[in-house]
Image (cartoon, helix red, strand yellow):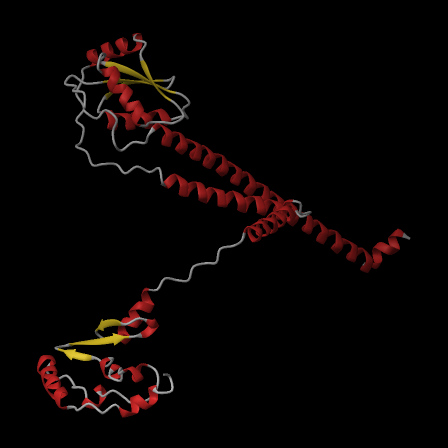
Length: 337
């Protein structure tokens, strides 16, 4: 059967191009001034192999752009798939190349990562055990500065944007009212603690819960750096809309709720941190403070070492000059004889 196939194909008569003329005219009318395909392209070849042997000789003409109005339609057969494309293919390819993402980095194997870590540790160990003190100090200083930058980046995540609120108008109190409120605030035992977390949503919530039954509330700030109690007082005044009556030397603030106090629906302000995040922020701040002190200490050590080296070089230079003068001066040699 395979031997008879070429003979049968040779006997196939050629198709006439007359029925294709009507098709060409309708195609020209539909597409305007688009170039019409020659009738010979639709004729089925009698021999050969591949797509043309199966009657697909018209695919070359079909892949050419067909203009309908101001757009060009192409049949893209690249990559083993047939796709219709509108517009200029070269520009589309350029845009596609521009949108391509950079190549992904190859994933390192576990053994390669371990070897890299071993290399870094060996390098750091050599610097730590270097006989030169300047190398050791500079290594510690660089490591501390990198940690400081990392802590600053971490603390930026805990910055809460302050929502614009109406300006709070504090109530005007007479001296007699202030004296009375101080006495009552000192006598009462209820208080709100402000610990290492600082001011967060829970502190303001507790103040409003105390103001539900009492006019005043004490806020005890421990631990507290010198002058930090005034920062706490300003922050709590903004968040709770209360009035500061007195700030005592033992870092205690007395707040008054106001004459026309109305308990808010949301007692914990939205522009404050939660209890857990406030503790994380405190730990990063504490670590940043200790790292800053350590950097100052290392910088002072490095400066002292450089001064010591410069002084030692000056002494060596002076002694060498004295020896040269004694050798070249004949009076000293004769006097010694």
